[in-house]
Image (cartoon, rainbow, N blue to C red; front, top):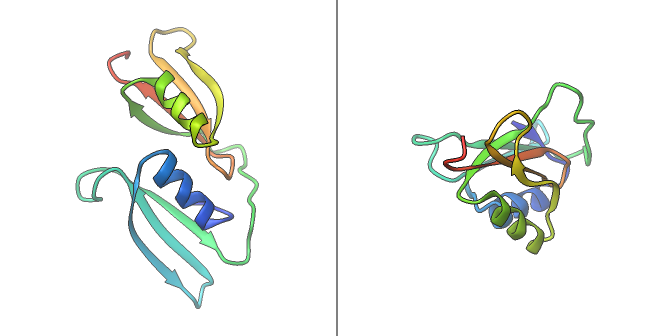
Length: 123
């Protein structure tokens, strides 16, 4: 689960930039938050992300415990190029990881969460 400051902005990133689908959404008026689940496939077949938007909080301190979400892509450099075309932020260009040959890249979502692109077939 990722806490997001602006649900519309985050949904645009995860659906339009990363190509996920909104799978389900539920508002909790008594708790003043909304949960939206996004992913590439239905929850019964693949892992999904839960985006939680607390209605009274616009930003979060990400802390030291969070690392990143990893997504396998066909071509990490092309995924970075597409990210930039959608106004996304690339924080590490595609290239071999340190001490290995796996091709990776890193991008950030609108709240600053890191997302790693891992190129298929390079591991």
